[in-house]
Image 1 (cartoon, rainbow, N blue to C red):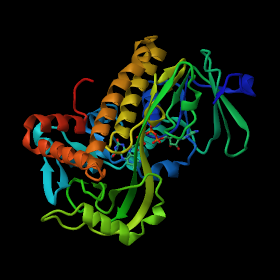
Image 2 (image 1 turned 120 degrees about the horizontal axis):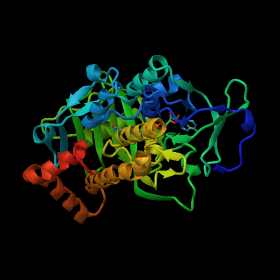
Image 3 (image 1 turned 90 degrees about the vertical axis):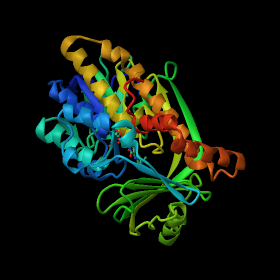
Length: 407
Ligand code: RFL
């Protein structure tokens, strides 16, 4: 929602060069880059520090993103604690098919749970670089975005008073359910969407992984996924009707389906454990074009959502954040606006590439259970091609790892 008029108390508000809305991977990375260059900023976060440090979500980080985090001193414990994966396994037709992408590309996936990455980033921003971060803010509103002196206001969680921050730029990093996307002007922005019409039951089990790698079960009863997250926690996915109620999935039903859909000759059954998270995600995607309007720039899920089909969302959020942080620093410290001018286009090229791959992978995951025998057969043909054609395998590996050098 746009609040074009100046906010109440605007004469007395504080001043910051950049206000970052949202302390997820995108917002905290932007904040850290700004702090490193001594650019004055504040991060506003609706949740508590404990909330952001414990919210279970992503786990797979691409190699280029790990390198970029390290280069900026933002990798925290990742190099010591992340698992490094060089293969995944498809299970279909009752057989196991291991796909050793490390041998094909010389690139790896790093598995490091998102809460750990966020914990590292918030510690670096707030405790090491002395950044200003305000937790528990309520009712964030954006003002005067069509001027070069916008403002952001919010209700202080302690006093209930509305506080005003005048700034030069607003970084909208508040995820898929935030408020900054709604402030983009409707006449200069479009939001394009796709809905796969499919749900995934996303599960976290208190159980060790059942394999050393990610597993994809392509089964007539629906897709099943297995993603190691650490020695005692494993993420599983089960395809389900969109909007399904997690209550329809009691413990025994979940494990029966996982055993069936991930079953293959010679494969051990998944190791059962207590389910500590159970939620239904609808497989939908959107992209905001462009990602900027005047002094408001969106990054991460605020600007584009890819369902976790190909494990791309957090990687895209980091990519945006590196570009946005650098572009803001270049403008504020050197008056160089080229990064800001090219920001949206540079991000969207990778975003659309990853969306296309997610769509392709969604067809593979869900084709066999589509109820359409023609589609089921072509899905299996596509899968077999990955294991018979080195060219198809190399192309898949590059997209799966996000290792293309340009987009
Ligand atoms: P986030 O992480 O949602 O952070 C946004 C932050 O903004 C706060 N916020 C507000 N703050 C102030 N005012 C408001 N009005 C606000 N509204 C919201 C929120 O509290 C939050 O702290 O967005 P960001 O930084 O763009 O990061 C995006 C990633 O979190 C997301 O793309 C990934 O989690 C997606 N994803 C995966 N991505 C990967 O790259 N690899 C994976 O393996 C992977 N697995 C996943 C995933 C997402 C999942 N779910 C739950 C959707 C697995 C799952 C199950």
